[in-house]
Structures are given as structure tokens and as C-alpha cells.
Length: 347
View 1 (cartoon, rainbow, N blue to C red):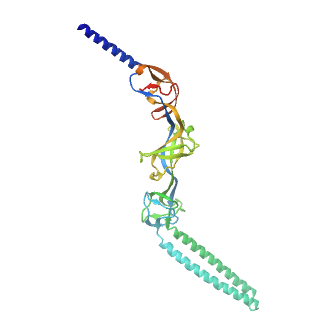
View 2 (view 1 turned 90 degrees about the vertical axis):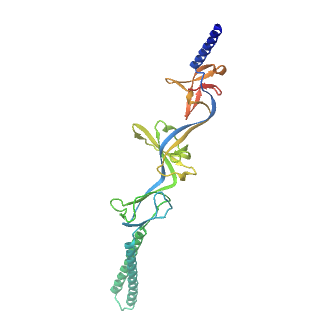
View 3 (view 1 turned 90 degrees about the horizontal axis):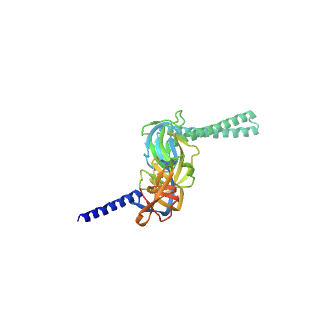
């Protein structure tokens, strides 16, 4: 009985020693098979969604705001009325100018008749040449008076049209800065005039993002990008790199370059200007890369290696130095050191 117990204890000790040796060799634990697949190099640009064009609308005439037809975030068409400015004074000035123009035309007609009469009298010898010259001068003054009155009327009519502030573009109202009853100054004022509202053309949106100087060399125009926003965390909007700033910006001792990614997705109208977002720019794609999980990598100084399982059921392991290429999320491309189908140990 005692000898049988000793034998069982010996077996347990041997099994324990084998298990400990196996753990030390790294063959016990999670493993992964080296596979071939598609992997892509991503460069991230962090920034905000911006419109292709943004306009500050100001009044061309002074006055009091009578009506505001839009509110923040409204979609507007080009030429759509936005704000009405008091027009009573201008309307009366236009009517006065119309009357002045009609009076000038009457004077012109009588001056023309008088000029014709003086010319006939001169031909018959009943009037002098100086009489004819006086009549011609009177006619020319009357003609100039018509032109002056017409110009005055046109100026006032144009100013009256400015009483209705219209949208200069099709887009979205970003912010209305005034209220009904507010006094406004014209854009010709020293201060630049009263800011009425801000508009953005939303037919084309882009993400303005910053890319680290260490990554900017990989970014090229026309590269595809996946745009994500905090507002639509579960959606990806297709984009394409449209512009790369030639001059970097220094921020906290790090140089960044501004990159514009045009949104070309069919659902781009869901996005709003100033939304925060990130663009994952696809700078390189390898279709049949050797891929392992990132947790398979071990580091010793600058050396990178993996542990390859060998023998029956991974009874032993082999340390293998590798060269890596693209890193995408938790996957790594292996350039040298492994073959497809080999098994590596994970951390």
C-alpha cells in the first residue's frame, strides 16, 4: 500500500514537472495560425467637418429689422428671402424719384418742341442763330436732367431691393445673429456692417484634419478614406483626399499638416458643419499578406521575434526573428521569418 502511494506521488511530480517545463517553453496557452489575407496601412487625420464655402451675410443698407424668415439649421435655396429691413422711407424716396423723373421728361419734351420751333423760325429768317443755340442748350440740359433723375431712381430702387436680404447660396443657416427690431448698419460702414447671419454651402462637405509629420509622406491626393464622426459613431462615410497643406503647423512641439478629405458618400447630407470626426486614410493595401495577431510579437531591444509551436500538440517551441510591415488594428504583416500555416504562441 505504501509503495503504491509512493508510486502515485512520483507520477504526479513527473506530470507537474512536464507541465512547468511546457509553460516555461511557452507552448501552453493560446496560439494562432499564420494566415494570408488583406491588410491595409491606415493614417488617421483628426479634425472637423467643414463646408466647401461659408458666408457671413451683412446688410447693404441701414435700417430696422422687420422680419426674420429663417432660423438656425434651416436649409435655404439661392435667392431665398432671409431677412426684411424696414422699407417705408426708401419706398417714399423711390416714389419721389419717380415723380422727379417724370418732371424731367416733361421738361425735355417741351425743350425739344422749343428747339424744333426755333430751327424753323431760323430757316424762315424770323429768328436768330443765337435763339436757336439757346433752345438747343435748354434741350441738352433737359436731357441731362432726365439722365440724372433716372440714375437717382435706379439707385433708390436698388437700395429698396436690398431691404429684402436674400441668400447668396444654397446651403444651411449656421447661426442667426440678430433679432426683429434690431438696428443694423450697412456693410459700407467703418465697422464693416452688422452681421445678420452665417450660411454654409452644404452641397460639398470635407473633413479638415491634422496628420503627424511622421505620417504625412504616406498621404497622397485621391487616396480613399473612411470618415467617422462622434454624432454617427456606427456609420462610415466614404471620402477621398483632396488637398494636402504644403506648410506644417507646430502644435506643442509637434508638427502637423492639414489634410482635406472630401466627403463623397451618398449620405453626406446627414453631416453638419463643425462636427468632430476622424478620417482613416488608406495609404497602402496588400491583398495576400502573411498576417499574425499583434500579441504574437515579442521584443528584445530592437529585435522582434515570435515563438513558433513545434512537435506534437506544440510540445516544444522555437524562437524566430521576424520583420514586420503594416500594422492594422491588432493584426500585423510579417515580411520575413514565418510561413503560411505555422502556429505561433500568443501572449
